[in-house]
Length: 343
Image (tube, rainbow, N blue to C red; front, side, top):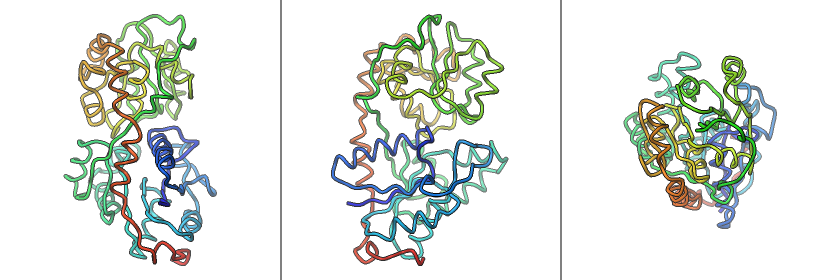
């Protein structure tokens, strides 16, 4: 099967959306499928408003036209951006079935960054996803949220972790820090609520792995916190492994793949009992949930590392790829061979 994936989030961005699709594509290709990614890096881009590290396509029609001029078997639209819009437009114009996915609490982010009322954004989301044969959500909680907002074809997908890449690894990046070490890894952005982690009166040390628009402000204001920037591969795994607790302060994430990555390195998670963590963290099994992050971190410290490892190993990426395949809709031969560049 040749699958076209339309996404406005792609490398060099470092986030859960990109990581999810990179891992899923690897599994799909191992299963014998071909995936062509339509992404901003294939053409000229411009920085997203108020978020310079995200690049948006200036000419999405060229990217989508090239990909759709060749035969394909299924179309999936991952994001509600320029490439997603253009792919949706062409599919709707030609009657081509497509599926979508919901990765980001877009209405909440639009409220935070642009003061746009969520009711307005949800109206747009209903329009964008309304024509899809299925809209894949990362957890049952998010699926129910989408259905309550009128996106009736929402279906639960899932997420996984690469336990070959994320595993207990020795490293020196955290050597010498007072214990316990509390770690955050991910984008350093307003919507991640990192201030709640940094301001929490936790004993020991705090470490932030990642980068983003809020890093400079936070680093200036909190010299006692160690900021390590982006880390990859074994360095990232060693950061997870060297911590005692992984603190996930976000209240808006739809999932949070980093929580499973931490578990795969044997580290328990402390988080709020909200959408995302509530579907990932089992209290006492791989972490702790509490409206007070200090209480959550204190309880998480009591969770055995072996229990976290076992939880991670039950959540592989092959299952993620299989669920995606079960929802994709085959395109008929006439549409698959049509040259859509004139659309």
